Length: 152
Image 1 (spheres, rainbow, N blue to C red):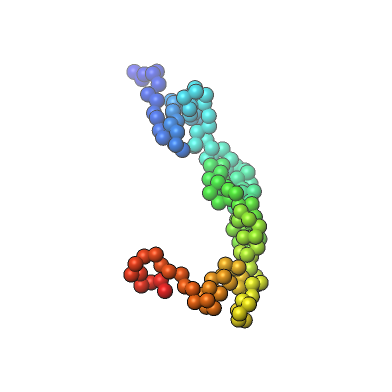
Image 2: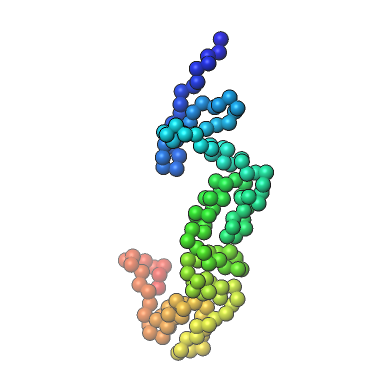
């Protein structure tokens, strides 16, 4: 004779906080409560709820599409958080417009930073500075590890 008693609750650690998983309701849908007794969508529901609308899970920043909202939100926070300036060539994001402009030079082969002491030109200001220090001033970067033979 089957028991009408619900199985015991299972506690799992998810995203740094405990989520209490309750028995499945009669409809077959799962529910999670966070100790408040209020049910929310389970991760399974989030993963499968938007699969019928592929554009619903497209990244608004780069256009990459995902199978579910969870993956889209993870992508946004890991890839684009605070990086509002996107490269039109490769989609790489930057926090500062000036960093994007310097990056674009790598795609266009533009070298707007000329060395004042020789005919070399550089795509990035930092590369020019390193060139001047190393070639024209004799200042080389020193490896902090004693006896390192790889850095010169």
